[in-house]
Image 1: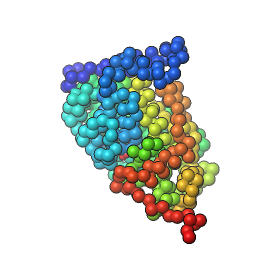
Image 2: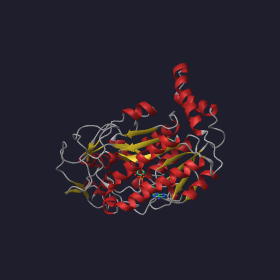
Image 3: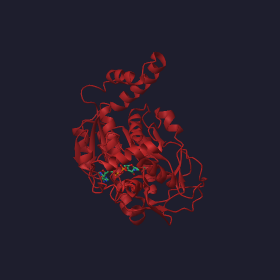
Image 4: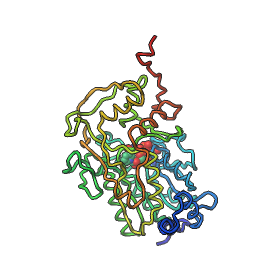
Length: 395
Ligand SMILES: NC(=O)c1ccc[n+]([C@@H]2O[C@H](COP(=O)([O-])OP(=O)(O)OC[C@H]3O[C@@H](n4cnc5c(N)ncnc54)[C@H](O)[C@@H]3O)[C@@H](O)[C@H]2O)c1
């Protein structure tokens, strides 16, 4: 096909070579992994000056910013493409920010060409489940139609590698028991329009892999949580609907009491079970997916989680433990679109990416999230906590 920008797809070949060499040399040389990677990256031409550009759509958002940092520390140039609808200029610290909408195919073609982008990580999208129930049309436009524009722009420019932010929401509860973990081939029964749009985007990407030889990895995150341990970036959704920041807010200072949505699920303590994964573990998985030696035309959906379910009340207890003070909460009715349990079986991601969650104990997640929430931070929801004194501290 006639290409619209001066782009050669060297990425697939370099990443493929890198993966193969890494495996062979690890077997043969027994070098420490970090040293081996540095040598191989030079060998594969991926480490000359500032490294290859990776387009990070939604890179001003929560998971995208952490991944941009990880890409930069590995020698890539993360080119963030974001319309700042829910992201923050201040979160873009490791490469250029291009303001634009993913629906704008012509703009994307220009940016991919100008930066000589070699691979794309597509985070941009709408994420609130409740909002998707109220406004499904908006979610289909942004999460599906705009993803189609991105795919076309990539094809016009000959970019052959995509990592897509999918979600555990594609599974829903299906016929699964509450204590069963979920493998990639489990029944797909999204419980919300949000989950429908992630599932539909996966189909669309898979079809393009078959038709045009695109290589794509759909990473189905379970519950992203925590923050960069350095404290410079973290979770700043507005409105915040995620449990851990809300529980921290309830434990520290002036935050509203937490509402626990339902205590009548078929789970050990009656509250929902979720699989919390540290955002730095997610970022590491994106690097592995960008470099994995998958052949052209492969579409690989992979779960990213720990394999362990934590109940809402367990999370509240972890927050209280780390904060050293109680978190105020009340029990409310169930929320529409909330399956009782979503717990990953991450075996396939571990096998194909050589990746494993390393920082995802509940206490590490909560400690990093709390450091971020208490520090100077960006975001309209920035809660500079006026920490309530413990009873023992009151004179
Ligand atoms: N946070 C989670 O627990 C979780 C779980 C599963 C999947 N995901 C998926 O991961 C991705 C990132 O999630 P997040 O928590 O970082 O969300 P986020 O809202 O913090 O980041 C999304 C980013 O995309 C940008 N954006 C939205 N629409 C855009 C558009 N049309 N064009 C350009 N930029 C646009 C926003 O400005 C924002 O910076 C999303 O696709 C989400 O569905 C997140």
